Amino acid sequence: MLKKGDYIIFLSIAFLGVALLFFNFFGKQTGKTVIITEKGETVYEGSLSDDKTVTLSGNTVVIENGCAYIESANCKNQVCVNTGEISEKGETIVCTPNRVVVEVE
Amino acid sequence: MAKKISTYALLACVCLIFGYIESLVPLTAAIPGIKLGLSNSVALLLLTKRDIKGALAVNITRILLSALLFGSPFSLVFSLSGALGSMAAMLLFLKVKSVSVVGLSALGGTVHNIFQLLAAFFVLGSAVKYYLPFLILAGGISGALTGIISELILKKVKTNGKF
Ligand SMILES: [Zn+2]
Image 1 (tube, helix red, strand yellow):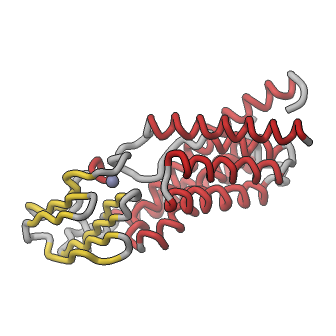
Image 2 (cartoon, chains in turn purple, blue; image 1 turned 45 degrees about the horizontal axis):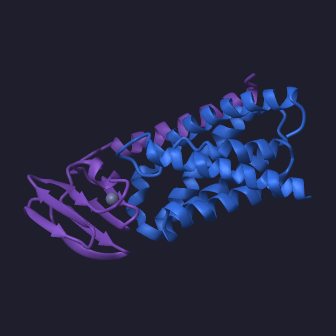
Image 3 (cartoon, helix red, strand yellow; image 1 turned 90 degrees about the vertical axis):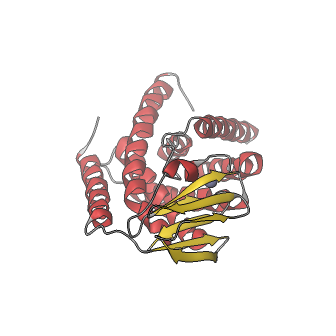
């Protein structure tokens, strides 16, 4: 059923995915800043060590104990709430329906 | 002609139902944009029948209707970008003899997710690049699965006559 070309495709996808995954986790380091954007505009930028609750039009972002997470959201899929805490550089929470992005830098 | 149009309409409806069921049963709770993509089977079946216009028509109809019914303008942009990228990639490899439906579908799944993320890059900003490796791997796996389903359907369709 499977042919040679299939294996080449599978291997290329696996290689690309794993290489980029490695790149994501390589030299992982604790971030310093939280940047929150809503609908393309930066609405909050502050230190990860400052405990704070940022209320947006549809999402509540909590920064505490060096982590940021979305506590509650009015979106249908709740993916952003389920993402959980982020604290490492480059880690991101997105709420696609509300166009909210929380990023640790 | 009328028969063709009703076949396309039926296929678009099947895709809509697939899409709705998939939205009810998310594969992962934490990573945005990951789904099985059963609608891909329908586009794939039409492509293997060399019906490129049909695949395009069904796909675009499905995306527009599903955005109207369950989505938002931005989900429309994501799906459209993903579907067009995926179809272009599958079309490119359609004539390669050493690639079966399963490989084609895995490629389509990965390219779909890459293009979807590309659209998200413009809508949400560069931070979404964090999800690239997860989406590439998930696209390959879900694409291979829907490819196996497509192959099973193709076998049935072959024995039961025309599509
Ligand atoms: Zn959300």
